[in-house]
Amino acid sequence: MKKKVIALAVASLASGGAFAQTQVTISGAIEAHVEAASASGATAANASLTSRTRVLDNTSWLRFAGTENLGNGMTAYFQVESDLVIDNAAGSAWGNRNSGVGLRGAWGDILLGHWDMHYTSQLQGGVDFGSSGALAHSANSMNITARDNVSNYGGRISNVVKYATPNFNGLSGDVIWSADPSAAAEATTANLSAKNTAWNVNVRYANGPLNMFYSYFRNDNVGNLDGSEQNSDRIGVAYKLPMGLKFGLVYDRSKRETALAGTTNERTAWSIPVSYTTGPHGIYFSYANAGDDNDVANTGAKNVVLGYTYSLSKRTQLGAAWSRITNDTAATYDFWTRGVNAGTAAPAGSDPQSITFGINHAF
Image (cartoon, rainbow, N blue to C red; front, side):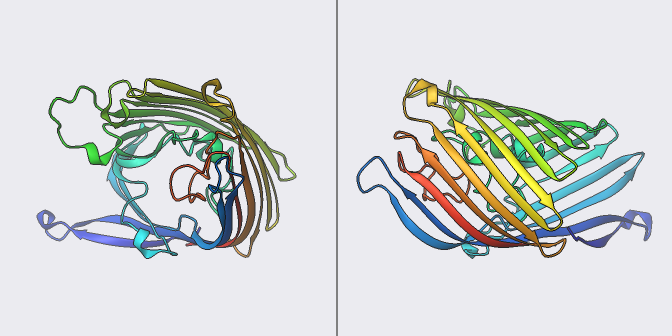
């Protein structure tokens, strides 16, 4: 990715003309797809979603990031990253992606802001694919390994304190705590018996052809309701052969307790992501399987992904993908982002399908 660096000279009045410099980097990506999306086979009559062709933004983004050398091995840094929803300008927002400010040293770094927690762990861990480039976000196994029928586990969480370790010969990790995952609930509230907090531990290992990760997520008192909780364990490994073939395995166990309804849902899921790259060509395949929620019959799902990319240059890539989720009769899985349904779940028993052709330009 090519980056443009701007040196900002910040005058220091107290030093008689001396100044410090903050190195600011501007980067981003513009990506769009033409997509045919549908969800046929719904259990209820007249609930299937008819096919629609749409121009789909695939998380275009703009990032401003900067560092200042403080001396003695210490660096101050910041990042402001924003969505650029190029197919619908009303959806863009300033600083709504990973954004924060922090300090970095030999001991690691600490950041305050809002940041990803857990849900993208398999992408960050280098095990799955589809986090960048011209593949649609529907083309990875996060569709059913990062969520259950009604809930995402983790997300881009507000009110975060994040500590990242140094890299020890390929081993690194994060510990992230959120004072309140919901920015709308920050105000002091009278007679609040339980306050919503969340935390995440994420450990990664990357050394040559081997990638591994483990991530644990816990969200206590969801929605400030005492006893409503989410927790999730996810682990994965991938190995890349010299010929360019990479294969992996992701396993997830997630559990959700709902205080008001008095229910507990627990589910396991796994996926096998496979990719092959040679020259400008990339070929991708993934199979994922989610079991029944808490042994409730017919609440599982399967997902098959096929994708292809062709790099025109280091910054510009073309991509095509087919992804299909097959829901059991009581399951409501949809794509983890830019789903077929306008809400958070597909109609029960329907089978969301996406066929995309797109282009990505990074700068």
